[in-house]
Image 1 (cartoon, rainbow, N blue to C red):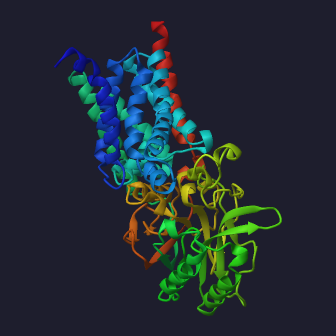
Image 2 (tube, rainbow, N blue to C red):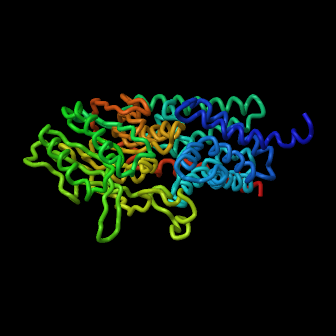
Length: 504
């Protein structure tokens, strides 16, 4: 090995270990890879002890560069930018996200010796992941804990949430990174075995109680993104959903995806009246995504509305324009649903001037949708990635969580599979089933244990029905929120400070 190659081997390993983490997440689901990949990266951070920020950044660049490559698909296919500009924007985003692990490794390496990293790094990792979840509106995608939805560690989710699982991964990975003799090897293996065994035992416990079982049907229109918001396609799109629903009317509830009705709500009244009356006649309710627009205030909202029966004994159809049985999306997607500095950015490129990219926010906490007597906590698209917002809308009588999306933006990338994985974690954390309706996949039913019980293939127009068991009660995570993980990492941090102080 040449001196030059030897010098840059740690740098290359950092990028490769970060990129390999992609395989731990959906759709690959090699969850066993998470701890070794992170351990390999941390070992290189120790080797580059005088440049911990660079080391953490290189790892993050590989992690996000490979893991969220679907963002490039969205920009390149629908943003109207030249390839060079698309790649540059993607590099900018990944470079920004890589700052968070870089900050964690920098602060840890600056103030603590490597022997204490298993006690210190989890604290700074949780801090930087918390920052990533809200800075610049937040992007908590690809957090380490999601990779463990099918592993024994997922047993911790109803207690300390996905963030807590991330902390456990960091603890274990750091111990493996510090192996230098039989004793440290034994310690690392013992801790990992304890964590995985404890997680497995916790998975056997049921935190919530089953309630009534409902039959739910969902329609997946598979409308090409290029045809959405094209006025001439409004009729064919609405016909598609009407036809897909013909075999679903005998369900207790029917769900269409985000913005399934392509007309603005004030202009779609004849069609909505038709669906409303049919759902009522069939003794069911139908929830659909639609964009509402107020002509007087020039405001638009990404909404979910209920058509048909609000309660089983309703004497008349529930829907009226602007009725209160609706949900307005709160957490808007930057560029896709609102454009920061829009006076400057919109003229620059089609990416910053997409159709339907100027929405108003709904409230953070809203009443549940009520459809045929079923109470549903909604999350539209990106919102399912924010556990506290979803949690804020789950109440004592919430039967299930409903999340709708249009993942046509992601094309044939691994974005939709990661999106589904996130929804599975929300179900497990909160002990509520999740029903997920999408335009072109992945439409799926998820039980309160985070298991997919039924799903439609991607990229087909189709429908699906399945029983959904509503639940009552709450998980410890619902009550504690992040208190559990903060207690853990702060206790470890304080112990490390006590140990480190005599050395100074």
